[in-house]
Length: 238
Image (cartoon, rainbow, N blue to C red; front, side):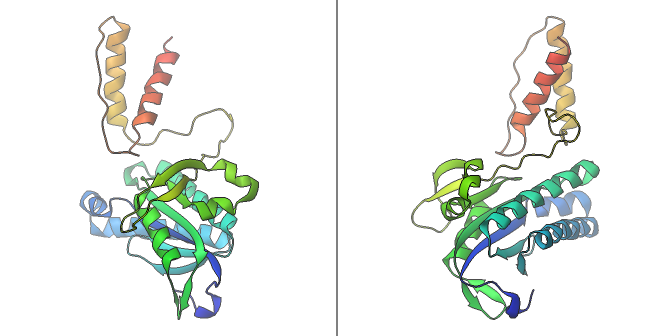
């Protein structure tokens, strides 16, 4: 936690991060390895926070509460955090982790070394409503971005936990930075077993044995990307 001297005041953009499925991480990796992974992710968040001139308000168990005087810098920081996590996932495929991020801009109550008020509550609720690997922002964030606001995806009104009226919500897209061929898709991460099953079925279809496949799962787990990979395999086979 930082000194209250550095805490932003007035109109502030609050950003919350949260690690998805932390209990499952402990069961899959063990307590020590899971804790080390969480610390590594926090380290990535702090690196981007420093780059974008934000303030760490406090740790929140499996995430962080951050604050920015600039909504534009907050959005850039959120994007770069997700990109950094994605890069680490590619480098450590056995330690896959995803974050949810929420952003809201408004007046805050500054009390000693913490921030309070509706702005903080809404940012937290947006983080809770986000799908794994995504960023949700409020209309106030959207309206402060100037011409950059066109990059956000309008999701319309959405109910937020514990809030009486729905809020107008936007998704901040997290485009992967392309290296080499600018048209190349982002690297495929995880779900190799499922991809292998689909490849076997593709082989059967090529031999004249058709079938029907149901791909199911919670929102954000990568169903669309998995089908895109199958389509790419099919195109490569002609």
